[in-house]
Structures are given as structure tokens and as C-alpha cells.
Image 1: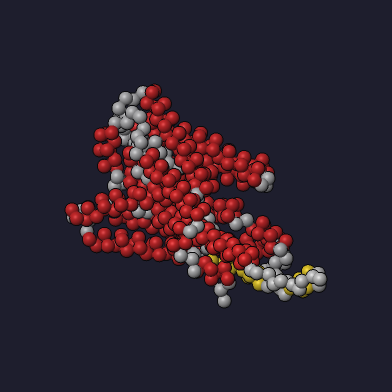
Image 2: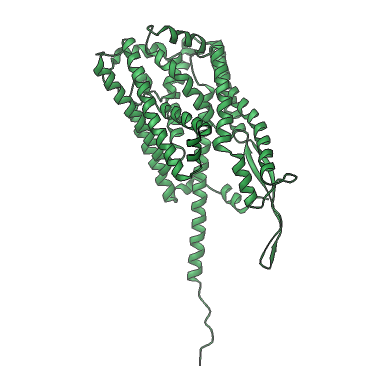
Length: 452
């Protein structure tokens, strides 16, 4: 039988958003910052030759340029101030988290609670500035080499670096503000909105090629069916759980004896969400970004790297799969679900897994269950991320809507909806408490016998 909280959550309607003042303000705040982000994608970097850039992107839009443009919300194709997107921040987060798992000083910071978390965030910001500076300079040099700069030289490079680094840091600030004062995870929402904004144009171009006869109707129908099936599969896997039975013993408080209860510990098949796919994409798209805008003047080393690690190449697929597997296990066990902390919390609450001793044995059992789940979860992430890549490279489909994009759209959308429902549920509870207090105040008290 469903609990009172579950029944209340099932009765929630979206019309209640108008009554929840705080939630409405959070949603409007989030939408306002996302609109600012979309406006920033249209503000160009100084010194770009607009006509040369447009003709170049028309040629590259059907290939890797379409992938890069979709991940930056179109800012890269327009060479806007947000052309680097949020990827330098994600790369810095990867480095800090990896060092936090291997380097002892950062391990100690992670154990210091809120103070340590703030220091780690500060180190991530410093790392973002360094990475964004290197990427912006490499992109400026590539733009000059590709003949896309109207006035090449030191001034153009300096203006390009300052604009792109400033844009990335502003995006990072927007993401933090959305997370703290809005709805959902700010960084994920920025990527989510960028992908959503580019889908209509990519879909229109894809269908126009079908009308011109470049693509057969069977391929168009097949791609649409593949996207629908993949969406359904991702939704199913993101909601899949493994429930670990938890038992609580009988306890005595004072003169009262409370019966023991039972509950379950839900473990998702994919506890890491879309983070592994984003991390892997951030690592793989950097050399491709630089080579895309450098035209035919890439160095021999870069040419060799792209020849073996270009999209659709066997080494690219193997490396992408390995990165997804690694980040799924690493992020889950180091950030999303720490088995030692969960086992300690169960022990402190007098809870235990039937047949398993509390403490170390429980942690070992949870690690065993989690590892088996992660094999399935990591395989699912790799399959969804790589299947469209393989089909696109084999069938030469110019419309790019990869598995990573589907994962981001579904995961971020579901997480945002759950947070909205949580706020609505909290608002409904507050309303019930206020009504009960008002009834208690308005209730007339019975007058006792008059004192003589």
C-alpha cells in the first residue's frame, strides 16, 4: 500500500506551480539565466570574418562540425563568446576529482565537509581558467590557420582568448547560480538547452535533404524510429532500480517498545547519470575542435591523432567505450554512492541487511551489488552513446543526434522534473501545516465552570 507521501505526490498537478511562489520564482530565475546564455551564443568574437565562417560551417555542418555546434548550443558555428561552452569546467572537474581520489592532500580536503568542498570548487575554477586559456589560444591559432580571421595577429589572438575565457567563466557562474537559486543542475541545464536549441535546425536540414533526394525515405523513417526506441530505452534504464532489503530491529524507548520495521535501499542501475558520457565527450572533442578550424594546416602529430581517433574510427570507439566505463565506476564509487558511508549510516541507524553483519561486511556486500549493477549500467551507457556513432559512420547519415545527446536530454529532463515535484510536495506539506495551525487557533475553547 502506498504511503501518504506517495499518495500526495501522485495527486500533484502542474497547476499548483502558480500557487507555489518560491517555486515559480526559481523557475523564472532559471529561465531568465538560460535566455541570457542563448543571447550570448549570438555575440561574436572580435575579428572573425563572418562570410568565411558561414561558408566554412556550411561545409562542416554535416560532419564533425555539426557535433561540435550541437554541444555548444550553436555558439561554435557562429564563433560566439560561448564557443568553448562549459567543457573546460567539466575537464577541470574531471582532473580535480581524479586527483581527489589519488592525491592525499585533496583526499583530506574531501573529508573536511563544507569547507573542503569550497576549496575543491575553488581549485576547479582555477583549473577552468588555465584549461580555457590553452583551448582559446589553440582555437585562435586554428582560426588564423584556416583563414577565418579578418585581421590575424597578436591583437586578434589576445581578443579571442580574453573573450572566450571570459565567456566560459561567465557560463560557469551562470551554472552555479542556477544550481543555488534556480531549479536543476545549472551546468547540465546549460548543455541541455544548447542541444535542444540546435535540434530544430538540424532536423530541418535533415528533412530537406530527404526532399531533395539525397537521402531515401527509408533512411529517414529508420532514423526517426531509432531515436524513438533509444529514448524509450534510456527512460527505462534511468528508472531501473535494485532494491536492497534493510531490516530494523525492535527497540525500546523508555517504557515503550517499538516493533522492528523493514525498508529497502534503492540503487539505480546507472547511479552516475549522464556524467560519464559528458566527461568522455569533453576529452574526445578537444583535438577535433582545434583541427576543425585549422583547415588543412594541421600538424603531422594532430593529423595522425585524427586519423586514428576521428569519429567513427575503431580506436575512437574503443577509447570512448573505455572512458565511459572508467568514469561510470569512478564517479559512482567516489561521488554518487560511497559504500563505506552508506554502511556506516545504516549501522548508526541500527539497520542491517538480513544475513549480513553491519559495518565492514555490509560495505563489502553493497560493493559487490554495486559492481554488478555498474557492469550493466556502464554497458548500457556505452551502447547508447556508440550505436548512433556506428550507424552514422556506416550509413553516412548527415543528421547528427547521437546517443550522448539523448542521454543528456532524458537524464537532465527527468532530474529537473523530479526537483519541481519535490518543491511542489514541500509546498503542499507547508500548506497543510498552515491550515492545521489556523484551525487550531480558530477553534473555540469550551468555557469551564465559573470560579466562585
